[in-house]
Length: 530
Image 1 (tube, one colour):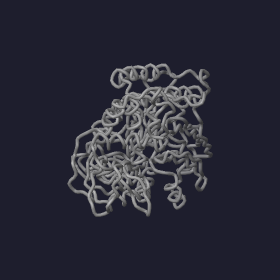
Image 2 (image 1 turned 30 degrees about the horizontal axis):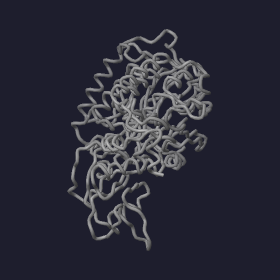
Image 3 (image 1 turned 45 degrees about the horizontal axis):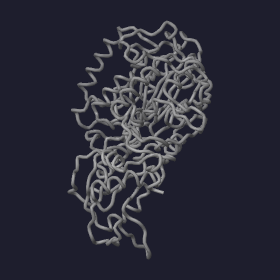
């Protein structure tokens, strides 16, 4: 827990209970290395009592469960154990407890006065099978070991359900922040999140405001957010940032699960916020900007890099004027194969190996073979996935969204785990009855992938069996529940209010069809789609 946290617009009774809890916790000792530092109601010490110091922020975003490193062209990229090794060797960062350690384990003596603060922009868990198959638990454990203090709430934090979020939050030991998340159903008070928190480092108070994308419901399965709304970014920050300053931090920063191109004009309109750093996310696009002198940084996703932000702070200065300088840079975590800059963290590497053994036992069966691999945005991988739905379900057309495909298929054996990594979300297949005109409307959606329909002459389209698409006729269309309920702006629910719910996991036809094809090194899967 942070030194202090704003209670996120809870009902009055809940605020009273929280106040009593904070008063009790104030009697507990602080553990400066543990991100769950005990909350305290004590006032910030007077500036004259403290000395100038430097604090380093370590910021990542959109980790998406990339627990393991990847090898590309002779280089090893990312990996949780590798990132932590760099943080410890280069930044002097203190690791959290090893996975499986007792929750009340005290910090090592060398970590009693840390100078670093690890933060995330959200979307922590959903990604490769080693995290997604286990509902994010491996990545949550890794976050605890890496010592994350706080994370913005990303649109994918409920991917494994609300209860899984609560469990992973506990495992990660991080404080989740969202200034614009509003709980409208009193029964969901457990999901109310603070707008900000204050953490102590080197005797200095670092305030951290968190923000979610206001489009969270459109960018995730909306049914999981019933009873929860998201306010516009600028309005929420205009309220939360003054509240955070009233807690008297020495520096105030923002971690946002929102794209830098959305944040940039908002920040430009509000120099009075006096932020020292803004971490962006959500877009998976690396960026290093300055807005009115404030670093706005997105270090990219998949734990392949992090933002290093050095704050020189003098607490003797007036409030909002204590940060003397800010230096921000993006640090890549990469090294030649066999030559790491620092040995990977042993505890994290050992834990990851254990999860990998469990994954291999559950999903290690080989179901196919790819000679060249299939890129994430390739026509081949799209035909493979949607084509399997069409074949297995016997529908006219299959439609998915490009962003639902989360990674490439590597060359070599294809296992069930490969499919879980490519399609990490827990979506179900739905069969709709759509008019030809509805299909053509969907075809114009920028994120749509359609299989079973091809362009013909005269601006017409032809189905896989040679029939011309008739705008007035109805056709069977397979898609997923996320898109049916309006995810990414699709309109299937309006086009067919009474679809057929198959209850079938969207990965099941892909696995079954791929296995039935019997592909091998001499007859690879990707050759079928060229």
